[in-house]
Amino acid sequence: MKKDYEYLKNKRIASIDFGLKRVGLAYCDPLHITVSAYQTLDRAAKDFWEKLAAFFLEKEIEAVVVGAPYGANNKSSNILSNVKEFAKELKKKTSFDPILYDESYSSKKASSIMLEIGMKKKQRQKKGNTDRIAAAIILREFLDEI
Picture 1 (tube, one colour):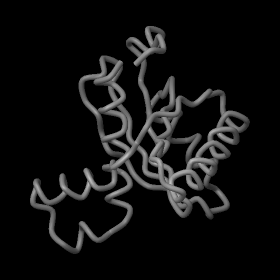
Picture 2 (picture 1 turned 90 degrees about the vertical axis):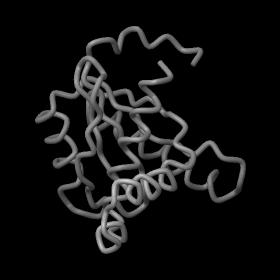
Picture 3 (picture 1 turned 60 degrees about the vertical axis):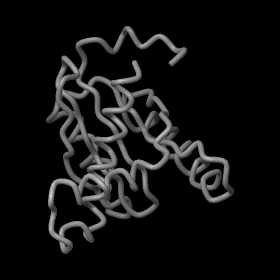
């Protein structure tokens, strides 16, 4: 990674797996050793931004990574523009300047992980589980890269 992220050392970081209907959340400890999948939030909920802010406050988050699909197909580019709009809104509504990070295939990886850990089919089918685990994957890959 070319950018200098030294300022993130010893900071709690959250990640967001962006979706048009809901977002998955994850966070790490200050030493960046553990990453925890947290929950999902409904983007259409009236209190979406309040719940997101409460998550940041509760977990003492100091930086935010937002997954962005940098794939080459048209569907990815449409979603990428939505992610960028979300990131702008996040910056306006919170004190965070989100870091956009490539999240290509994080949902597929999340599905594989759910199979590997033996999660029952009914649990795997809940979209929220995939979103929160995808957020954890995005954060783990970001931390590993920096």
